[in-house]
Length: 425
Image: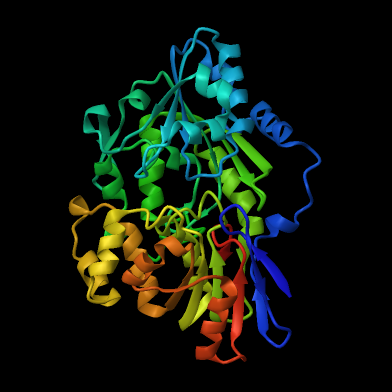
């Protein structure tokens, strides 16, 4: 059996001998009937039938400062199929609207012009007002209140001063917020470092409810939802995409209600229940642009964590051509005495002293406490991966052979072609 796994922009073939005990865990999105409508038609249909909200053109009437929060370069949001329609409808409601596209970088690096062109196309980049959010720039923030957790909510002043705040995005499973999309455009999207750090504190990350596909009782989601409402996020256009990054479903309307409807739709297709826990779990981060660094790749690794038995081996197939992706993430794992020691240290950190990248290395430490991890990644950064406590391999077949030497060929192997698209239960 040959399975093509997403890896960077080209993919990588996993070759499986017939005698191996293999189970493939993948979202049913891949097998759902292809929509009869085009991507544009799906988005336009959702916008024509908003959930719990007037149409965007109606919301725009009389609104001078309109802000569309847009995803950054780390998110495969098909913005070319969303933003032109949002701009058009806003201007139908108010031809004189002063529109700003605010790029929701959250805690990521700034999005480059080339990346913006790749997302929106030359026409929008050359003709629309675009601002890239910087969570580190405290002078650009406005304090609009206190979140349920007690953390202050400071957001980009452009969003805070908007007469109408709306957003684009996509909904996928998220490894500690439950699902992406909707309210995440505000927090962490356009929030300050202080707010993001407070929301991503060790106590919240440690909650058993801060897991893939869980919204109820999730303390991280609770703060994000409150942030959306406090910021006045009135309307969203969110899509669900398939493995080819094509739109297969769209929702539009009220920021909370439309997002919940999108999550309900996705949940039908993305939940998978393994036959049994795996001795070896192979996962990916969905290929480019999500597998550009190790920081982001923790997401796909949590799917393997959920599928593997305690002590099982995880193989993470992720190019990581941009390196570790976070200096704090790198240093914490490189310099710790052990994952157990690092976890003890993290859990002792108070909410208001949360460190940058702490949430990511907290989850990574949790995985390393219970699993041996083999990274399949670009050659340039394999030394860094070793410094962080991982084993490395040139390709997935080499990694599988390494794992089978430990487990034996009777091992149960779970293959998760896209670790960011599934809920493993």
